[in-house]
Length: 394
Image (cartoon, rainbow, N blue to C red):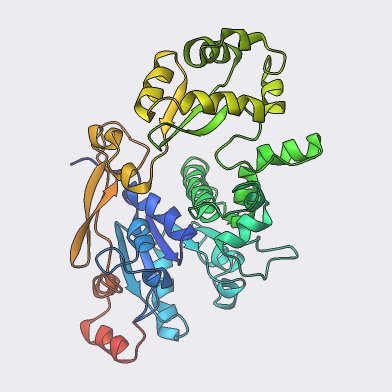
């Protein structure tokens, strides 16, 4: 039996929605014991975002495999006492509660450092725990708007949200890597460093290129649907069978190959309108008209074949159903079955393969499924646990 890299690490998480659960699921993927503390009865509100996956939320199923669910009323003294028993033996504490809530519960970074000097606290907030917006609630789309991402997404006529929770995912990724870094630092130096990530600052980092372009170019990148704002030709073009093919020309060698091998007009290689990348962007409409006319003469598969033969990166524009049946995922055996309460679902393996180590793909828990086992592991007697249940502490 192979030991996963984070076996022996215990994470206690007061988590909800997407960002924190995404960070802790990745820790669980690597073998950490993740104890998810939920409200008695209802649990994480993300459990009720939808009911499309055998009666469960598509978000929750994605974010919460391989965890243990413990229900606790933290407003009750006995509930808080149990949480502190868990923290005394934990390595990491993750929380993305509402602004100020952790501090009001006595779970602020300074209080935890005084009481548990080896515990690594990880705080995920909307706009940071200090500063003028520290008290604001924040959700993914609000942050997409505040960072300017929505202004870059969509068509010339209309803005659009990114189709996934990109701010939450960015924050979850930085929380995950931050915790790993803090664990490594603690192991090598003995020093403990709290981790703090905000959704706003995580997505702000991902806005680096358009930020540079806007600050030093005088205007922000244009909103062009599938077309790339600073490279041409780079976008999706309709084909004769009503499908779309997206391709990209990244350099002058590829541009020459496209002109000669696909467009059938080698003379365009040195046309002053299209001679450089900047020229092609400046004359995008004229260039796109030439490309669109050529694509409209062939079916999608023929266009893809022709482009691949001359070394141009290209792809069909899939919907989600086509992605689910993608031949790369099938051939590389990336799908696994994961249990959810009352059923099983298909889930993708974690993207980072560690040679020789199998992926952990344990079940998604029901609300409070592990409460009794966790409390028994803390040494609490059966009659005391039953009294906690009677008093709605668990």
